Every structure is written in structure tokens, then in C-alpha cells.
Image 1 (tube, rainbow, N blue to C red):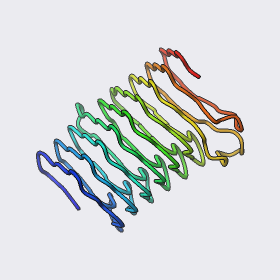
Image 2: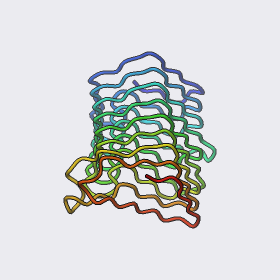
Image 3: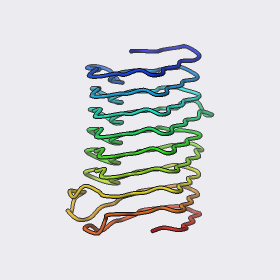
Image 4: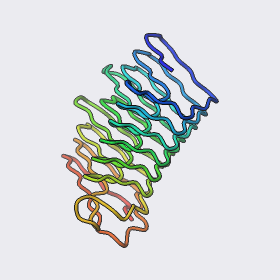
Length: 238
């Protein structure tokens, strides 16, 4: 499905199974230059793309909302195993909530979710389980070259894996990041470079705030958190 050059698009209660974008992006759906997008209560299963976004790609959006949906076993030969988002408008907003990402994979970065230049990103109440990337960020990759605010809350990362860096999430170029009430647990045993050493999180942000983050079932490995920030605040890290 290709959706291009309209003001608003809504997709609800739909299932996409075994679709393939052989020479393009977005295995099931490609959305480009659509101002407002609502996706709710959808299932994406076994879709793939030769380029980015095994399930969906979003290019040049103003407002995007994805809720109460599931991405199962998507594959991208590029980045963004399940979803690839590029918000080219300076004031774009992305809201993702109650979404499950399971066994998605990317040949490059962002095994489940890859986001470029989100101005306002809210990611809440979602699960990332057994997603993989051959390079960086087994689950979530966020990169920005302009002012960006990222809010991550109520997330569960479990058994995600990246061959090079950041088994769970990699975030760079962000102005402000807040991560609260989240859990990172049960990584895969094979990891980057040296087996038994995992760089779980990599964050580069002007301001970073972490509160009530729970690390569990990591006793068999050494975990590295690389956080580069001018203002850094940690509270209730377990």
C-alpha cells in the first residue's frame, strides 16, 4: 500500500501479512508527505522491505500516532526492522503507545524502530522483545540533527540484540530525553565483539533524566551504559 500527498490518513483494525517491498521501502505500507496519520489496533506480521521499514515507512510527516498495535517478525534489509520514521518538518510530533514489537530485525540499525529527527517523540507503554540489528540498536534507534524532545515511559525491553552497539536503544543528537518507569531485562547471550560484554544503552543528549529504571536478569553479563550529557540526573536505578 502506498499513501502519498494527502492531508490525513487513518488505518484501524487491519492486518497485513507476508507483504514484500522488493525494490522500495515499507514492506506493507509506504506513507509519504501525509500531514496527519492515525494507526490504531493493527497487526503487521511477516512483512519485509529491501530498503528501510520492514513493516511501514513514514516520510515527511507532521503528526503521527500509532497505538494498540503489534509488529511481529518484520525484516528490513536496511534500517528499521518494523517501522522507519523520518520527520522532515521542523515541528513534527510522533506519539507511539501500547505497541508490541516482537522478533523484528534489520540488516543495519534499529531492529524494531528507527526514527530520524523527531521534534516531539512520546513512546509509552510498549514492549520490545527479541528484536535484532546487525549493526546498532537491537530495539530502538533515534537520531536527530535539530532540537528534539524525547519522552520514554513504561517501556519493557527484553532479549534484544545488536552485533555492534546498544543491544536495547541508541539515541543521539537529542536536546532533551526523559526515561521513566521502564525495564530492561534478559538480553541474548551473544553480544557485541566480546561475548559477555554488552553496551545496553547509548545516549547522547544535551539534557538527560532517568527515573525508576529496572535492570533484571543480567547477572551473566557485564553491562555498559554510555550516556553523554551536559545535564544528567539519575534516580531510582535498580
